[in-house]
Image (cartoon, rainbow, N blue to C red; front, top):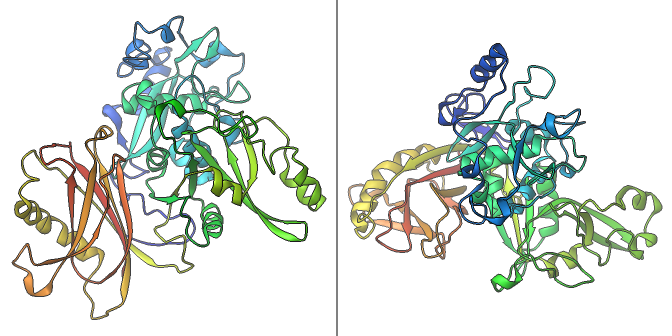
Length: 491
């Protein structure tokens, strides 16, 4: 599959067949149109047997059946919560995403970023549903999972307390697309509690199928501001966070006068450069998915710095509202935050202005316990399996030109525990050694084994055949499997 990496790339989609956005896999075999028609014909609102409105959908420990947090919860449909519920009002926006009593800020930050790209948003949130026409209490959403789009169906019974939504809610109160999407994602993960704690990059990946990169803001690359600007213009999704040194610091504010929350995911929603006291000042706009608790330092809402720039820019940028969104200087951003995550929708490097023609390869594999301690068997197995795919990805040519490759390895199943990190190596098979699995050159390692679900690396490689060797930290571990994708500039 070849695509021109310009604008919004379709690189994350499979060929237009089973598992593509246009023919998503039906999660648990449920078909939206069939079930909705059955409900309309019977006059009954849909009740999902696969994710019923009961304690098991909430969780198992903190949100378990006997937890104080789940007492008094009542499941209600939107028409029971307001007189005129709406699915989406005037287009989905980031202010529709306000965090409730669930620690899924990582997902909500990704979701708020998604609203900045309408094409991507309506890939995840199909338009063919609302509370007016053909309402049957059934809704559906699509997520990217291990190389394919999955269509997830839910009923619209939502957990409430005292007549208010317990989890994600809209700032307007009568808009429910976000709450229903959160429920669909909880169904995909097993329960609402399964969404507590996570990496924003997981949410970005599952909402786009894109390639994700990390930037350590303590060692930022040159030109990072331009990278962020280019990413936003390209429709990429961005998020950032502040690292903590221990559990006691989780969701603690940095200082009383700054009000940034540690170990909390923020969306990066914009950048701007203004003339400040005769010199250019770089600004970054962030959003807290809580919908409140904003930065109060320089360039915050109503800060004195706004009075020293062009009044037209001030009027355009300085929106004084407690909506969780705020500006700060780029220098403060680098000082305060630890990590930046960017999910690119095109494999083109954000640090380069070149456009390439890319080829996409998706592959899946499984390894069993006991195979990892035997490197020869592992490499032989994957060499036969990957060299064909990589040969298509980077066809051998006489040219010695280095070709760009971005490779990602996605661990299937639940998030790995800290002692169960995963990694990978990329080898090139030498032309004279086509029958020898060990005569290969090691080109790259993923680095320290990580508990993140995905490992991604950008590389510059000569054309040829390559093999990817996944690994676990401990030799006896038996993950469910892994999927991978590689995008390379071909001819």
